Length: 399
Image (cartoon, rainbow, N blue to C red; front, side, top):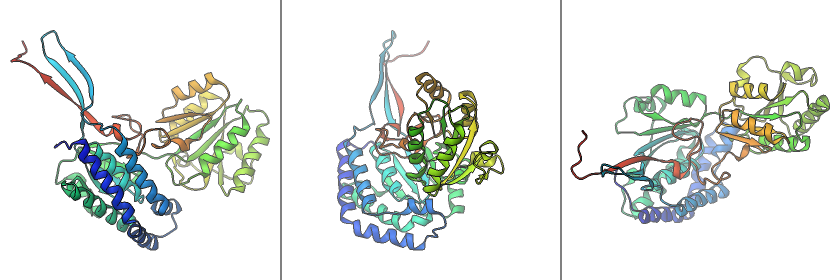
C-alpha cells in the first residue's frame, strides 16, 4: 500500500474540519430526513442516530485530536544486529483495507474514517440504512477533503449495499480486505463471522456486570450503579447486571433502597428468585437467556451472590467480555477481581461508562474490541496498525 506523508494526511484532516463546519446545516438537514423516517420503537437506536450541533462539534474535535497525534505508521518496534551481520528492524505498518459495519451512529462515519486514514489504511464504511442520508453527506465531505489535497476518493468509501449484497460482498469481496470490524449487536456479529473470508475483529455486546462486595461503601455503590445504568442506555458500556453480596450489612434494607432509587429514575428491574423474595413486586427472570442479554434500555437485573468467587464465575459465564466493576473498600479483593474477571476493561469503585476511547486517554476510537487478538478494548489510532520486518543483508544465505 502506498504510504502517504504525514503532512498530507494532516492537511486532509484540516480540510475535513473546515468542510464539516461549513456544511453544518446540510448535515443537520440530511440527518433530519433519517430521523423523520425512523420508527422510534427502538429508543437506543434512535438516540445513536441523532446528529445535532453538539455531535458535529464532537466530530470536529475527534478529527482535531487525531490530527494532533503522532503518525502511527513506520514507528520502530525493535532493531537488532545479529552475530551473522544481518540487521533486522521491526516497524509498524498499515493493515491495508479495513471494512467496518455499523448500525445508526453517523459519527462513526467520521471517527472510523479519520483513524483508518491517519493510520494509512483505506476504509470501507457499511453504515445502516437508517442513517443513509447522514452518511452520504459525510462521505461527500470526506471526498472533497481528499480531492482538495490531491488524493483519490477511494481511501474512504461508503458501501451502498443491501443485506443480501453485503453477504455476497463478504463471501466474495471484489477487492482485497484485510480486516473487518462489525460494530453492533449479536445478529450483526454472527452475520459477519458466518460470511467473512478475512480476519474479523469483534466489537462485541456489552452485557456489563457490577459486583457489590460485602464491605462496599453503599453510598458509592448507589452513585456508581445509577450512573452506569442511566447515563446513556444506548452505550455498549452501560450497566446491565448487578450482583449484590448477600453478606453485606442490612442486605434487605439496601436492596429496597436500591429499588426505590432506580424506580424513581424509571429503571425497570428484573430480579432472580432470591432477590425476588425481598423485592416481591418486581418481575423475576424467566429463563437463563436473560443473563446473556445486553438490554440497551432502562432495565437492570439485580441478583444475589455469595462471595467473590461466585461473582467472578457468574460474570465470566454470562458477560460479553466488555466491562465489569467491583465495589469494595478492600484493595486485595479488588485486585483479585480485576485479575480474574475476563473482560476488556475492569473497574474498582467506578462506573463502566468510562470504557470509551476519549475517557480512557486513547482519543477517538474505531470500536471497543472484545476480542483478544490483536487488541482488546478501545481501538484507537495506535491500534490500527500491524507490523512488518525489514531484514538487511549483504549476500547472506542460510546454512
